[in-house]
Image 1 (cartoon, helix red, strand yellow):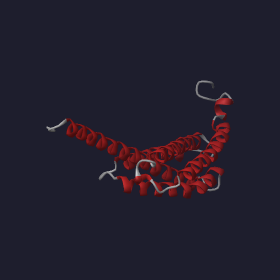
Image 2: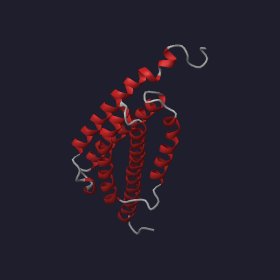
Image 3: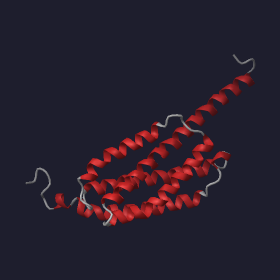
Image 4: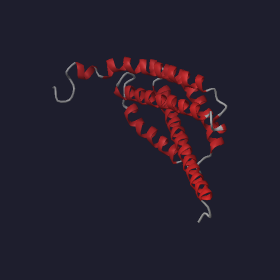
Length: 186
């Protein structure tokens, strides 16, 4: 038990700091897992639909996503890492589950549409990550280094490319429902 109110406050601060460290580590690893999922999904789209517009877009943004992951890995190495990374494992499992829809999907079908929608959401999350890290880099030296305004802008551009294609896919992915041949309308 602390001997003085000052020691007590210091103890509380240390517990708070420890909790914040765990929160930051968890947050970073959540995004690291998401980036692993995105990379595997992009590789899958590129391989399955290499001659389609979706394959071309995947080929174009994959190197950028890989670079973003490398930057995030550098940040994680400064902040701290879990011994067993459950977040990467979950990302791996999610990508494996997404293969079922992609395997049966046409290059402009619902499976590819949902893949691009998932990628878009992940990219928006990454942009949010860079914004938060940019803010906290002012007070946490471990987060300094990357030029966050560039990363934020790159994520925004990635999202615009992915979302533009997603919206284009919506026209064909839902054509069956539009034509009245959806389930229950035979």
